[in-house]
Length: 368
Image 1 (tube, one colour):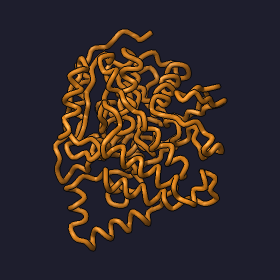
Image 2 (cartoon, one colour):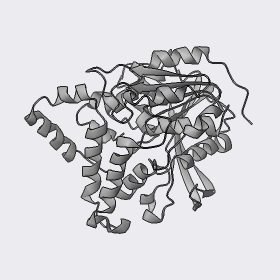
Image 3 (cartoon, one colour):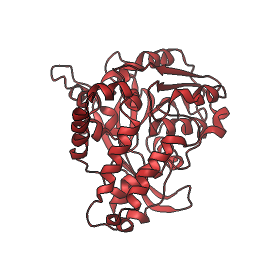
Image 4 (cartoon, one colour):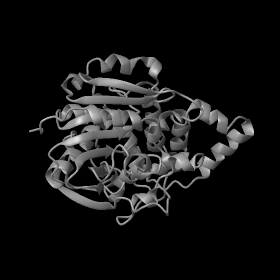
């Protein structure tokens, strides 16, 4: 979701909050006088000889994760967006609206797991040393790895909820059908349950192609970061994130627009080009459409009416949700307060709907 770039314009709404293992939710919310919040714990688990969908294998796949809340509580899996990490879901706009006392995912009653997807955060990724020899992973691989993390390492036998935003939303569509009955409730956000296509894919491919065609990339063996990764990422963020009304409000004149663009281009961009290339390329074969009838339990699809990557006027979600027994849609109306594809990263817009589902959804039998 390219939070780093967006933070230059809306730091209060979209800034990432990186929380140390001993930090608490009060710190994440910036409320020094609030009662201590749930501790965030970090860990890593190594999977031996992990086999990817491509047929490639990795002798050791490191999966980094964060947990918070009551280990005896109802388990919840939270999945982040492209270029993010589990830490990006600990922002005031997300965690600050959900995990506190009395909130929908009150950590006193839930055990919340926030993994770093393959290729992201502190999980194994190309920049660890393999560069372009790193396996060409996809979203299926991410979901398999996260399910193994839950079941083999953390001892989770079932989930009350699996929820994800953007890339995490697409993973949620896959998780719900690859492991039907494992989660009572699935909440995919900022995503569509169909093949990656249209503007969404074309602009992702432009990021990948911009890096690969940059002479400074040197087939992934660069000695300095290619400039193309930064420029392509800024372009993608402007084209597919921010919301038309909010973006125009922030840049109503050419001078303001130039200043906004200059700020984004000058913002720190610590990402690695190979990691960036792999992250966007990993969506290339995403297509959960064939398995929608397999989904069990309740599914609440949350999108924003001004989502540039998943525009509701396509009618895709309305068509496909009919194939999901127990599926329904919550569409956030567009306004000057929404920020396009980034809207669902702000839980204030949908947390009441989530609370209703949590209160009403039946508990499924533990999955085999």
